[in-house]
Image 1 (spheres, rainbow, N blue to C red):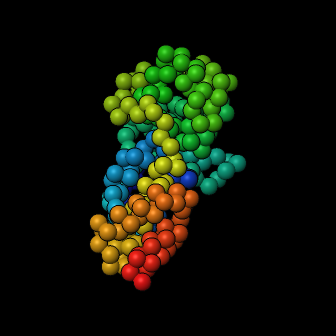
Image 2: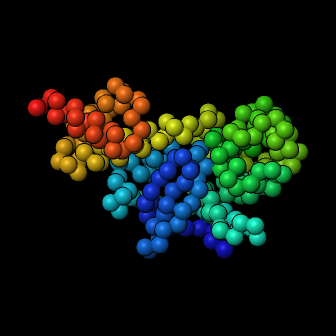
Image 3: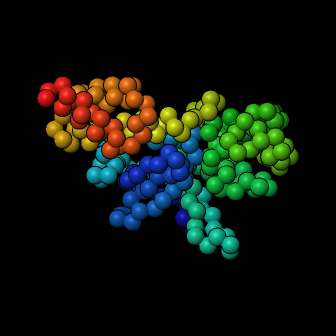
Length: 221
C-alpha cells in the first residue's frame, strides 16, 4: 500500500482536482482536496510544469481500491492529520473518496469543528453534501474528530473556489509561454493581466497566449 509519495510536481488540474507527481520517471495521478490548492499554487509559483521545472512535493497518501473498482484511487494531503481525518470522513455512509475530495473546500479543522459543534448548516454547505448527508456526518463522527478540530492547518473557513484557482494557474502558464518566446516576465505578466481583464472568457492557454500576441502585433504592427 502507498502511504507517501515524494517527487516533482508535473501537472495541476483544478477541475479534477488532481496533480501528477513524477517519482523517478514514473507519474502518479493524485487527487487533492481543493482546499489545499492555494498552498500548492504558492509552491508551484510560476514554474513551467510541462518543462520539468516543477518543485519537489511530498504528499501523505490515502490509498483506495475495491473489488468493484480495482483501479487504485490515490488522494494526497500535505499533513498526516488531514489524511487521518479523510479516512474517518469516508466511513460516513454515502461519502466515498471522490465525493469527500470535492466536499473539502474548507480546512479539516473547520469541518471538524462543525461536526463537534453539530453545525448542520455549515456541513450542508459543503459541495455535494446537503442536509441529509450533514446529519449522517454528525451522527457518525461527532466525538471522533476532536483532535482534528484543534488542528493547526491554516483554518481556511471561507470556501476555496476551483475556478479562481484555475484562472491563477492559467495566467502563470501563459506568462511562462510568453517568456519562452523571448518576452520579459514583467511584460508578459502585464499583458496577460490586461487581456484577461478585457476578456474574462479566455479559458485556455492557447486562447490567452494568442490574445496577447494579437494585442502586441496590433501595437507594433
